[in-house]
Length: 112
Image 1 (cartoon, helix red, strand yellow):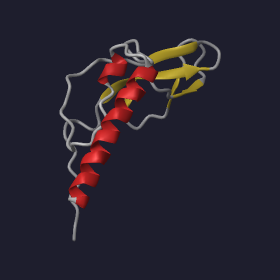
Image 2 (cartoon, rainbow, N blue to C red; image 1 turned 180 degrees about the horizontal axis):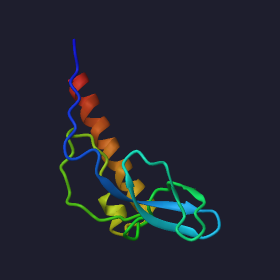
Image 3 (cartoon, rainbow, N blue to C red; image 1 turned 180 degrees about the vertical axis):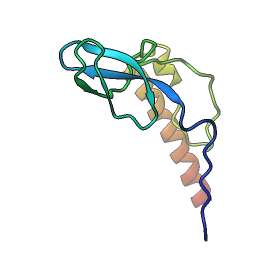
Image 4 (cartoon, rainbow, N blue to C red; image 1 turned 30 degrees about the vertical axis):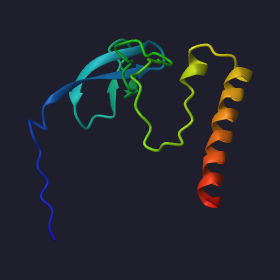
């Protein structure tokens, strides 16, 4: 099996990269794609390449409420009432009643 490497675009062209000088901080320079360092324009010292700062603000977390999707199986525990403000002890009592009814139906089916 053989592999073919295809380079799209001008691989010998210059790109704008960001470098970090120990004395003067970050600066941009036009360099070849393979360049790992560039001389600082202020002091001519070799400065290593550094990843660019993000252009936009990054949110730590974002939560949105999606639409309700019907569960795949019938025994799914629905917690939407809790999200809407139902007290936990009230929700647990409702859950227990559903479980008891389900168990009663199951026993009735088995015993006839």
